[in-house]
Image (cartoon, rainbow, N blue to C red):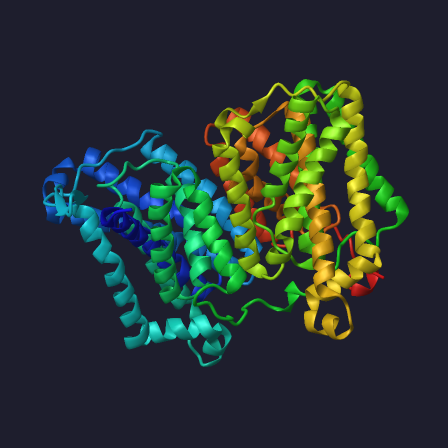
Length: 617
């Protein structure tokens, strides 16, 4: 490995740091995990690229004008970020982190389609930066001059942020807001301008990072998701709320990139996430992370599953309504049958995540890992051994359980956002293997030609029965002694430990149960679709599971049903009628999260539980 390759890794680290510093600043002050941060990166790149190539191409001939266009891209990203802060982030300030994450994912969808409408679908190749088009001789190799200059920007930004936070009144107030925003408010300082300023600076850094990429790579509409995942890796590895930690984590991940490209080009992404996982296993709060004072109120704790106090007759009425919908879909023809099966599979997948999140408070942002293992296990067993549906599903569940048993003990050591990101790391490793292990998984070509369903009518009827059975099992779990213990662990872990409850064993047990059900959902998905592709392990699949749970209501017994019907139904119908349906779906998600962070059923006023926690015995 040469010095030039290491320098390339450090150059990439600058981009990672600019992104991570902005995300860290926003999280530190607002406590919002901004999933849309990659959108501001893409906005800075696309706006600057179009300015240089279409709107004012003469700027590409002058270093001064080129630099001004880069800064303009950062300014536009900051402006859009300010609008998002006023309209969305401010309204989500006191919602739990996962609801904020889902709301900002909706913002990602809306911004993506807005940029697609404004800038088009084509890649934009911007010209090289004037005066920095050449290379520097380093040993026997050449290194681009622009990347050498880019390496200096990261330390300068770090120094500038450090001076701002330590030497200015505004910066000291930002630090105070990071430590304890409520105390700051008690001293008579309005935190809203601080939050707005943090979002402005954070989004400007993201836009600057995107605009600075133009001399190196084209601007395109896939930049947001590619960058946000690695930004999360850097932020979590460095420690939430620590800009210094983000700086050193960016260097670490940049060097891991360089090592991976040189020695393990097919496993670079795996190495990145394994690095984050190793850091979090050794230091659950990251390299320089520390405990931050929570800003959310007591409404986050003592949550009880709604719907448990309904009478048997009421429960039966809800089940009959779902049976009627399923029957109507069956008689509606192949299109509606497909939608109904999609919804039922995602109800099962959502319940698997809901049992872990709602009862135990264990947050997973990578549940697609078990869903994918279930799908691939079922597909491979059928293609290679001719396994029928029941056996293929059992193999899929076994694969998901094996993965959960292997990594479960390490995962549950973390909590909150760290657990979410560690689970994301595991899912991304599974996705990378599914993409690159071509002899086993078929890579992007996938595994096709699955004929697991012999009788479609019987499969459909079985899916309806199993879906209702899954809801009933969730209710039974919540009412059981294990469910009560899990909720005690979630709401008052120290008291639960003092009471002699086996905390670790309880966490591992519900984690394995959740993984098994997610694996079964994946196996059923493979049977239903007749094929499996790496997308089943992608970030989008994990986000879909979160959307199903949170849109309906994580503490609503029938929440996964409402969430799946909305997500599958609205997506399908909007997709048939509108070109930019994802953006409209994003708006719907944001509206639901702002209007009722507790989910659609609460928004509809469906009182599925009395106010007292005594409904669960």
